[in-house]
Image (cartoon, rainbow, N blue to C red; front, side):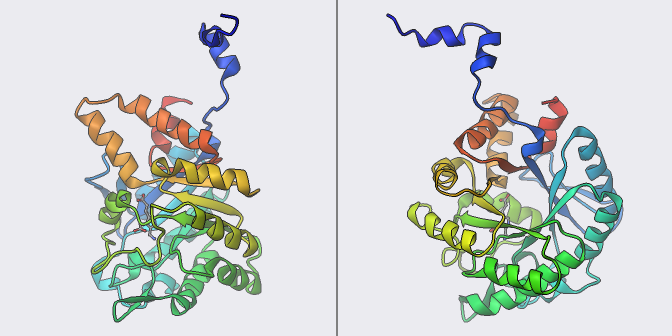
Amino acid sequence: MLRRPRRNRKSAAIRSLVEETRLSLSDFIFPLFLIDGINQKVPVHSMPGIYRYSLDLMLEEIDSCLKLGINAFDIFPAYPEEKKDRFATESYREDTFYLNALRTIKQNFPEACIMTDVAMDPYNSDGHDGLVENGRILNDETLEILGKMTLAQARAGADIIGPSDMMDGRVGYLRKILDENGYKEVSIMSYTAKYASAFYNPFRDALDSAPKSGDKKTYQMDPANSREALIEAQLDLEEGADFLMVKPALAYLDIIQLLHQRFPLPIAAYNVSGEYAMIKASAANGWLDGERAMLESLLSIKRAGAKIILTYFAKEVAQMGL
Ligand code: PBG
């Protein structure tokens, strides 16, 4: 045998020489859940180790993450039912707790990168990402609401806005609104290929944001398809997105790779709540080594072509001392 691939695996020193992919804390965006109130740290039952924080405790959490080397955060608000309406009005009320919290977070940690979520679901009494009329999700009417939400988040200091709604034309629409109002520097991380997935359930528990009726299949993508991800990515590129995101990550590594190969923008992947819950649940049962499974799955996401990984594991990885 002239060719013995095992020679390149024979020692830790050689393995590290030939190692192609390495995780870095600078790859991570840590999603955090915000609730109103003070001194609140409420566990999310389907996501062991993840909490909903009131602002005071979230500031402490962000501080400890920054000290560990996590510099980017995606902040999601959980609203009580009585604040929700059909039009997600609360999402752009200047004095709402989410926007106030963003302002305080930016004041306290100007160097941190703060990403926000643009979609109606946390504020929508119908639980959908768009405006519902007679059971249908209206696209263009939703854009107007997303525009107000985006502007309010930009005013509150968001560095990156993350449209996660999957309405057609929203990236261009939001880019235009941001630019016209003097927020040319606010970035857009588009949820480019967001699939209608079973892996979002723990997140919907965290935010109490599950749809009241129907599903999200008329706007989120069909898991059977990869070619329409190319259309979505092409549109987002043309409409001014700064980053393209694929979501979920693990069941969609082929999509991450496809967009990485075809598009020059940085690719992000969202390692979603259900992916986190699967590993935590099996580790809790002693069925697999949670730490190794976590690192292996994050590595696979990066190897597929994602430079940026949104993951609930971010702090745990940082605590291990990457
Ligand atoms: C909603 C939104 C969802 C997630 C991020 N933004 C859920 C959904 O589309 O139903 C999921 C994140 C996760 O599961 O970790 N616009």
